[in-house]
Image 1 (cartoon, rainbow, N blue to C red):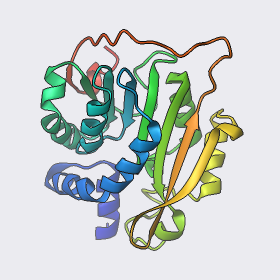
Image 2 (image 1 turned 135 degrees about the vertical axis):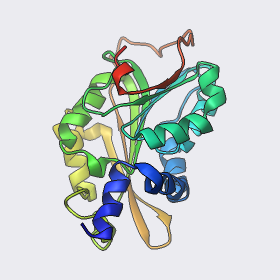
Image 3 (image 1 turned 45 degrees about the horizontal axis):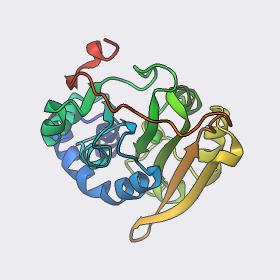
Image 4 (image 1 turned 60 degrees about the vertical axis):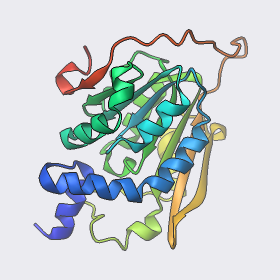
Length: 238
């Protein structure tokens, strides 16, 4: 196995000592994408927010400060990332405002229409069946809710040796929009725009909303949070 393939696998699911180092790299590489994607979510204080692939937990921290009267959940399949994110967000976890799961994304441990805002930064490359997983995202998203997805454009990633087909599925704007439409999101509710996060690194920022029924007024939340902690996969549905 080449070193590039090893790096690609570590980005997909960080583990061991190398995974801990990858977490520190993510902290730097994802700083601007996280900022852009979180801004696009327009988080309100009482929102229930979910991040898929929270990595070392920087975005969880930022979103918890915005949804200070709501709830922030995170799911990541890497126990190494769970550990880093739990340490970074220990206070919010103790206060019951953040819950982090170690689990896959195929079956999200939430009922229908439970999430107001959903974030996924630099993780869509690793979804083997993106339309099915995006359909699961649509299931848990509340009518009127918003999704923000960031991915580096395929035109750049094709030159990155670690982003091979064994680990990464690459996206241009058209492919990203098509995957969202296949998942059931309405075309006129999808916006994919070009952004630049680093010099010479073009990115794609997709924002999607689920239309709210005409009769539904703006929802109000009691902002009641129950439970807290860092939960491994076996507890994700409990």
